Length: 287
Image (cartoon, rainbow, N blue to C red):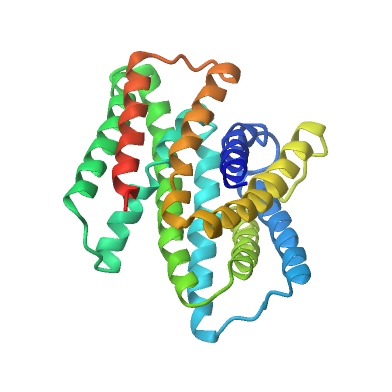
C-alpha cells in the first residue's frame, strides 16, 4: 500500500506540472490559482466534514496559518504558473525541487537549527546542478533572458514551498490537524489570488473551454486535494523523512513528460545537472 501511495502521488504531482501549462490563456494567472485553491478548499471542507476534524484553531495559530496561505498556497503556485510560461514544466519542476535546500536555509536562519556538513555538501551539489543546467543557455543572449525569467519564477516557487514546509511543520507541532491547515491555507490562497488580480487590475474571467476546465479540475481535485491526502497517508505509514524522498522522484518524471510533450531534449548537461540536484536533495533529506 505504501508503494502504491508513493508512486501514485509522484505521478499525480509530476503530471500536474505539465497540466499547469494548459491553464495558459485568457484567465490571468492569479485568478487561475484562485480557482484551483477554491476547489481544494471545498474538497478539504468535505473531508473535514466526513472525518469530523475540528475546523477552529487557536487565536495564536491564526497568524501562522495566514503566512502559510500566503507563501505556500499563493506565492508558490503563482510563481510556478508564471515559470511554465517561460520554460518547460519539467525544467521548472527541477528548479522547484531545490525547495529542501531553501527549507534548510530558512530553518537555520529562523529556527536556529543545526546544519550538518553533509547537508551543506548536498546544498552545494544541488545548486551546482541547477547552475550546470542554466549556464549554457544564459550564454546565449537570445534565449538566456527567457530562461532566466523562467528560472527566477521557479526559484520563487521553490522558496514559497520551502517556507511553507517550515511553517507547516510548525503548525503540525502546534497540534493543528493537516486537513484543517490545508483548508484554511487553500481558502487563504484563493482569497489572495483573487485579491492580487483585483489590485493589479486584472479581470476575474473564466475560460469555459474543455482544455481549461479539465486541467483546472485535475489540478484542483487530483493534484491538490487527492495528492495531499495520499501524501499525508504515506507520511503516517512510513514517516515524514522517508516520504520526503518523493520530491526526488517527481522532477525526474516531470522531465520525462517534458521530453515527450514539450520537446525538451535530454542532453548530457541536463542529465548531469538533474543527477546533481537529486543527489543534493538526498543528502539534505537524509536523516
